[in-house]
Each structure stands twice: as C-alpha cells, then as structure tokens.
Image 1 (tube, rainbow, N blue to C red):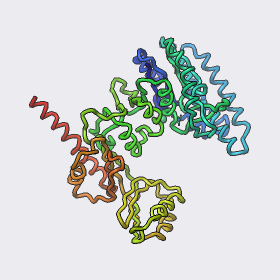
Image 2 (cartoon, rainbow, N blue to C red; image 1 turned 45 degrees about the vertical axis):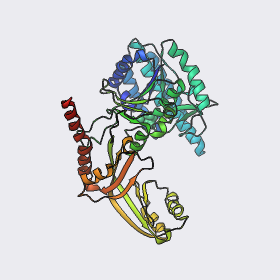
Image 3 (tube, protein in one colour; image 1 turned 90 degrees about the horizontal axis):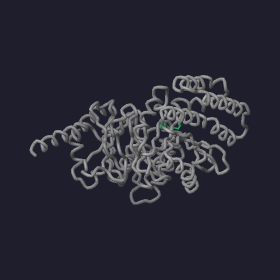
Image 4 (tube, rainbow, N blue to C red; image 1 turned 120 degrees about the horizontal axis):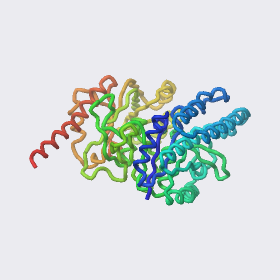
Length: 451
Ligand code: ASP
Ligand code: MG
C-alpha cells in the first residue's frame, strides 16, 4: 500500500520550499509515495492573466532561477522550460474567436504551471537519491470536455492511474504528477477547476487504494478556532469527513468537500500536514471522528454576513411559499448559507450582499423584509453534538449578554450555528473557546491527577 502526498503552491514556491519538499518526501520513502504538486504559488494566476508571452517573462525567470539554484545539472529542465515558453507563445499568439475555444486554449496554457513544477520536483528528488519520475497527469486523469472545470471520468481515470502508476510504485520509483490538470479521452488538455490539485490527489488515492492521502500546506492542520482571534487555538487531531465539510465554509484552509469526495467514497483518510512543521501530525480527516468523543471540535466563525428575515402570514399552511422565496435568490444568483424557518417567517444568511437591493425588492412581494448587515455567523461543530444534551444551553449561557439571532441546528446535527453582531464576534468566539476547550483541558488534568 502506498500513500499520496500532495504539495500546494506555497510548498513549491521557491528553492528553499522545494528542498523542504524533497526532505519531507524522503522521510516517507518507505510508504511508497505518489507525489502530486501544484504550480508554484502565483503561477496559475499569472498564466490565467497572460495575454501575451512578454507578460510571462517573470514566471519563466522564476522557474529558471529556482532550477539553477537547486539542480546540479539543470540542462534538461532548461530545455523543458524553453519548449514550454515556445508552446505557450504559440497558444497565446493565435487568439481564439469562440468562447469554447478560448477555454480550451486557457486550459492548455495554464497546464504548464503544474507541468513545470512537477518536472522540477522529479529532478530534485532524483538528485537527492530518491528514484523519481515525472508522470504526465494527463495520462491518468481522464475527464469530460468541460474546459476550465472538467469532471473526471471515474472508470477511465481509475484504470489509467493504476496502469500508469502501479508498475512504477511496485518497482520503487516515486511518480511525481502535476495536480489540477487532466485530458479528455481524445487527449485534449483540461483542468479540474481552481484548487484542483487536492482533487487530483484524492482521485489518485482512490484509484490506487492508498492507506493515506496527505495534503501538505502551510498551516498546522485544522484548528479549534481562527488563530487570529484565539491565539491559543489548537490543532484538531481527528475530524470526520462530515465535520470537515461543515468547517469548509468557514475557511479556505480546510479541504473543500468536493475535492475529497473520491477519498470519502473509498474511506481513505486524508491528513492535512504542515510543510513548515513536518514532524507535527496535523489533522487526520477520516470516516470516524475521535474514538473518545470530544463533544465540540471547533468554534468556527465568519464575519461580514448579512441576515435577511421574511415574515408573511401567507406562509401559514401554504405550500409553494418557500419555493417562491428561494427562486428570488436563484434569480439573483446569490448563495444562501444558514436558513431557519418558523410558521410565518424565514431567516437566512448571505455572504455576498451585492444583489441585495434587487433581492429585497423581489422579496417584498412575498412579505415583510428585514435586513441586518454587519452580522457574524458562529458555528460550533462536532460529531459529539449528536445526542449530547445541553450544548445549546452551554453556548448561550457563555455568551448570555450577547444578542443571538438566527439559530440553527444543522440537519446533520453535528453543527450548531447562530448569528450575532459582528462587533462582538471576537469576544464571543474567545469565550466559547475558553468554555469548550480550556476548561476541558483543566478537567482532564484534574482526572489525570486523581489516577
Ligand atoms: N494551481 C492550481 C490553482 O492555483 C491548482 C491548485 O493549486 O490546486 O488553482
Ligand atoms: Mg491549493
């Protein structure tokens, strides 16, 4: 059994970061790793923004200087780089007319970020005595033709990944692939959508049925709260897939549920590791949560939220009302996050209030509308909430002097979410963290003392 190790853009951003990746891979050599890398940080953005080859000189120069600094023999990579430069120049030089054509070209251009970073890393690993080979991800990840946001064809992807990678792994070679990119069955380059390297890692992990998928990033796993608000926030050792999904909304640092879907379906654990502190265990996300349930896993929050309340007597005993209401948000392409309803009113929260004036105008046809900007959402997450009575009471008594609106216990019953005034969010999160984490630590010490 092997493992997948995925390194994000900041982990391969410069020579020092790449050296660090090589040493991290070396420590896992026994586990037969398959390595997936993002483009160097900023490169995907630069490639997406490029209109001509001149605007990319900085990108090429960055790769050139990193390879010079790292590789004893950088000739092969230098050649790879100049052929990439030529190919990109050709792609950019023939402007596409049709939008579908434009997306196809865009995928072809942007794929070079991962092609180059994986080539560079493979060379570096070899130089470190780790027998590695760059494998073109387009031979493994087979997708539909939805350019810039392609969906993998699972059967083909699994079969191809196995036939491309297993022989290498079995003979002790470390395959190094660029994440994010794939190809149609006809071999045309596609991409899986922004941040897609995690998805590549999960796909390969599922295809090869690995024992663990490691996502290496620059934070120490998932924390019990936002460390900018609660400096004593701790790394959560274990999360269930559902807990991780609930937390995903609150911070980009947590895995996107969609990206780890293949891992979830195969029950493969995903570990979030910190490449700046590789000796730390990070957070393990898996089918089960901790065996000794710690009731609350995290106190997440999000500021800059607007809440909207619609009250209408017409709602009472009527059907079709909720549909009419949500059609308004649909029409204005606005995402609704938390929703709560009573007999005659619906409250909901929005991150993006840019279409609000138009939304309110439409909603007023349905009932009385009250808008409250400047709110924050706090979310208490934990599998242990299911069937642990008194959590809500504990939450509210901890912040009893703060006005709480829009209370919702998620349908999965592993989260408890509510809105407060934005100005008081730091205070509320700090106090809740203290209540659910600091006291717990003291309690544990006390019992330990007794034993
Ligand atoms: N390089 C791609 C991006 O920036 C994919 C990734 O990093 O996951 O979106
Ligand atoms: Mg990323």
